[in-house]
Image 1 (cartoon, rainbow, N blue to C red):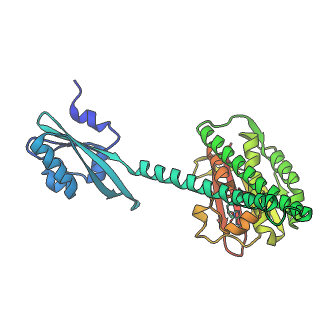
Image 2 (image 1 turned 120 degrees about the horizontal axis):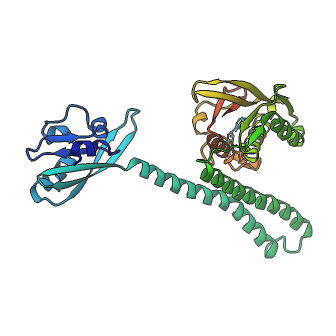
Image 3 (image 1 turned 60 degrees about the vertical axis):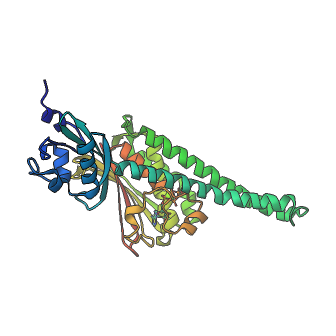
Length: 341
Ligand SMILES: Nc1ncnc2c1ncn2[C@@H]1O[C@H](COP(=O)(O)OP(=O)(O)OP(=O)(O)O)[C@@H](O)[C@H]1O
Ligand SMILES: [Mg+2]
């Protein structure tokens, strides 16, 4: 038969067994990480310390009826962690099983934030549409074809925004579901950069921005999803044009293979650099969050949904690569996508 300590040692969450002498009889590695080492043989009161957990243990010792309690602590990086501890009596011993609630909590919180954000983003154009419909049906624009034409143009833009938002949400959803599956088709990155930049020349001209593409002579291919990599490069160049147009120039480069110490493998790097106002460092860690925009008003005006970089990050992840942003106020920004070859 398997020994009890071997059994609890393989369990991923913290498990503590209290013997009939009320001392710690066994504790698994995950338990030692949370509660500390050298606890075996100590009385449970000095080992567990938190009053609500002690009260629950005491009640199970007395009544034998299973009980639960919360146990709060901090991890190495100082983040709060909450466990729900279930305490069960097996013969003369008590088994304490800790379940981490934090992951579940933050996932719940994220889902709620996401729904709130989507509703808000959809409601803004929808409210505008309803207002214009009302004005045209029953309001002052009822018999005014000139005003009607003007309103219809605005309505077209608002409907376009809703359409883009829904399109981006679907795209994000698709990438997220595929994230575990690394794409395998060879993609010629030099050709891809050239063709995306070419497709954006009109946008660049309108913003009076010069696009400069630098790719090595030798063909560079990565295992990838052509459409998704196009989407990545398109959003980065569009952003550089939209938010960095003051610089008058956007540089798009493909760097030859090198060893990446973070991914610990050979990679190539796509760099999109602008010479615009740059990004305050306080925003950098949050840029890839869904709907995060530095200047919400400016981004909305440009038709942005704030989902572009979230999609870029997920596509980079799916390719087992990463996104790296460097920026300094007044010095422009540089967005790099690093892809394993
Ligand atoms: N090159 C850049 N220079 C300055 N700020 C930038 C740059 N790229 C992105 N940002 C900031 O990051 C925010 C998020 O970018 P993201 O691409 O995710 O969304 P968006 O461009 O607003 O909308 P979408 O890409 O969905 O059209 C932008 O709103 C902008 O504030
Ligand atoms: Mg964008």
